[in-house]
Length: 267
Ligand code: GTP
Ligand code: MG
Image (spheres, helix red, strand yellow):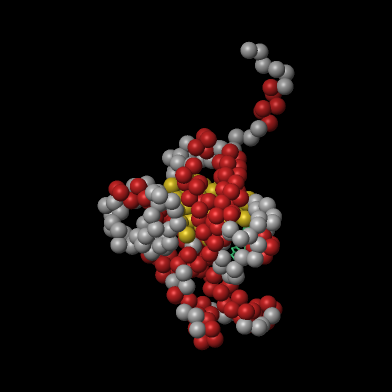
């Protein structure tokens, strides 16, 4: 069939394919969730229902997109890892990011009632997304460590901050109280002033959540610790468990080994 004279406009489309042999991470992040969480009266600093909703959406993502091998989430963000071998949509950035963002957002809206049976959705949630390539498993590990360290630092700060506010300080006073404090001082403040042992807080708050397919663990051979991701939320084939005692190989998920260093930073 003859091409129309308008056909040439296709040449303006950019080739946005991500390079081969690189791990792909798509990170999505809630837009204006500071406001969204306030409108919906999320518990401060961590709302278990909100976090479990995020986890459930991530689990649906793994159900729907077989190319996702691993997901890590904290607060209003989730990172989805695609294998270096993935040929999903010819690795086209805009396709992958837009599909992930829209599917996750739809899941969030659809599942809202399940996690907030007594709260109406008063505002539309929406997420942004970006894709980044990482050439080596080590860099993927460091990427996940970066997100998790962020989780830990923010959680420790926010736990102190909201305890101070709940005890009567203004937000400004709480901010000043915490200015320049080290992790140890924050832990002492929590324990001495509020009787909270930081180590005893839920793993999900301190370390974030991860989702992956359990079947990958069936090929276990290497005995390694997975101290980072102890908290799993998922459906049927995803099992909640502590993985540190399991033997498993990392044929499919090489970036998951050697997480011990992360544990040292984050605990
Ligand atoms: P943009 O992502 O730049 O649009 O800003 P944002 O408002 O979404 O803030 P950001 O992504 O930097 O941080 C997420 C924000 O979501 C936090 O600062 C909190 O205000 C809110 N948030 C996320 N999870 C929870 C939660 O469990 N409880 C409460 N109260 N707030 C949460
Ligand atoms: Mg956000």
